[in-house]
Length: 105
Image (cartoon, rainbow, N blue to C red; front, side):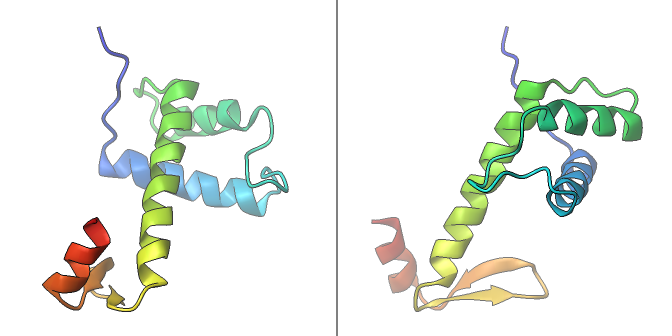
């Protein structure tokens, strides 16, 4: 049986809010990683917000990893010519199919 967890949009939004608070509160080390005990604290805060949830620290760690991967990909695209940010749709857009094809190579 897999321990994989599918996050709802509400859970993801709550986690991002908590992560922002953690960063502002100084729970992030100089190397960009969270300090020891932060995942447990995030887990506790998520359970306070959503008492019926079944979060585990590994779920939180994996979610942060996936968010970081998505952020990195968006950041890299926005640094390249041919990509732009759409404020209405809140997403990266590409100027042409050729730019998209080059990116995927």
